[in-house]
Image (tube, rainbow, N blue to C red; front, side, top):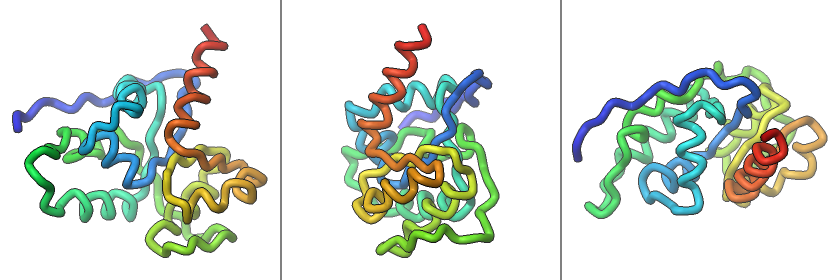
Length: 158
């Protein structure tokens, strides 16, 4: 794998703050899911602001360190996510919603602390809380649904 510089996104007015679960990040920068390529570009351009806490980056590092088949070569951004994410302190207060997967609770906790915010995930344990979280300003969506909202928002402001 050839190293390349990972650009720091420039500040963009009206950029959406966004939490991304670990699997979405792997789909984007390891598996290179075609439906998420626009998301990657928007993150690099600073149109979307990915926010993470230290526990989230630790989980990503743990998963990233697993042995992957050669066909899955991580993008350099996956190896240095701090270059484009904004680090937020992990909240001291837990969200009132208890995730059935304890490893995913950190996403709900940070989402509530940063509300209003969007959390993009495919994880059923997180998506389960969509309706209740929305009442507190946390919009939990699949990345495709969130991306469609972003494109619709961008189209309406042009």
